[in-house]
Length: 262
Image (cartoon, rainbow, N blue to C red; front, side):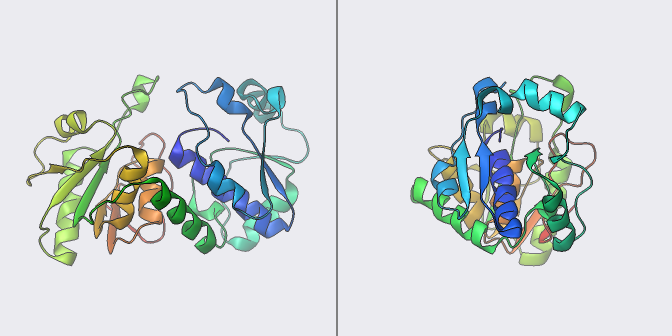
């Protein structure tokens, strides 16, 4: 397990799938957080401990980033890393049956089996940790990647994408009364987007849990290439959630079946 909230949700959802499809207990190794390049810590402990057959461990050097990099380069029997996603639940079950140690971000809906319970528990945990948030008509989520240590990996969809997404939403649901922005840095996001043809209101929240609730309760969503964005849409109530096509963007989780891509 490693990464921010969105990546942690992908990993934990996969662990839940492993437990469901194998019928046995699953240990989630938190050792990699000790050497996180971005200072991430594990923030989903209450959610994880509420899942049947999922437990948390810290195996030190065995689960560290250097060790897992070596294991990925020269895997031993039972080691499974991300590859081509399974075509259906049967293929996912077969993949799980081959493994004893799973390493990856698992950023694909194909790795999430029987998601209803996990989605319900995730929503419960997010709402528990957030304040009272008004329901918005349209929410744009824009992840800036300003802290990304690799300059070439900072590419995000721009104003043309947001314009197209808003047009898709309003052609389907009618003109929006309000368009709100949720971002890790709203000022930077507005500068990067430029003129999108609509006035944008900054949706102020007290932190990431408030931000996630803004996404989960919006009537419609303009999402970006972010695992946080993906989960806000996947666990949300939106009548229409628009997601960008892959187009080489960094950290591009495969879109959920209910997302519309432009």
